[in-house]
Image (cartoon, rainbow, N blue to C red):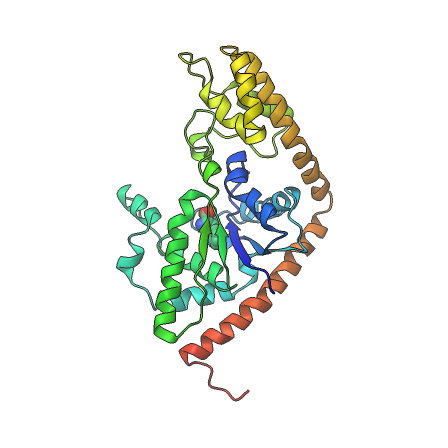
Length: 318
Ligand code: TRP
């Protein structure tokens, strides 16, 4: 029996933080033994906000190292970048012709941009359609993502249904997979951890950086247990142990923070060292990415053949 398939994508848009890790990336590693996986660097998606070519190239390499460092095994998970598989953008166009503008106007990302009176580029508007193409090309069963991406996966399902209704059964309907307990990882100020709030702890932080971030965690002195410290702590240490420790050390914020620094260091150090190892041989890492793209392309090509057949453009004798 063949394994089920997961697909997920990460934009090459800068350093990951532990929120990205627990919210999405970690799941790829957890799933890799049970599923056939695809972990894509969605560079075309990033174009709507990243228009500096040098930065684009650097970021792609960085995400590749990040994926390898967290323990993704390229034998089990196909690591590839979107721009290496042109079928993604090709399918995106075909989807564009079966769905409507009002349907896409319901997407949160579009509505938010609209509410801020931003001039929205067509790529941003179309973002969920390209994402649907990413997911649907591979017969994906589940899409492990952060809670903010749930709507996009629903849009992918709707697009698959619309296509299937128009041209006959072609695409499997994917499900999103969100780890409830970590769907929203809190930042150092208690709000959702996010680059835009400047409240992150970088996933590959050096010791000093971890220290600085933890010392900056906002604590509310009206409570014995510092909520924000605890919320981050429970990501890296068993809650049963923590409850005991936090009860014993009620009110001792400094000690609790020091303990959190040590626990974060224990968790981050091996990842950080792994990443340094992979960074020593960039050509090797790039060869992994390239081979992944070639492997993915075979699957995507076969699916596109089927799509071309369904829509009636395959007219040559075989
Ligand atoms: N939109 C996702 C994000 O910003 C990235 C993404 C693109 C993605 N294509 C995908 C995620 C396909 C899962 C599946 O995080």
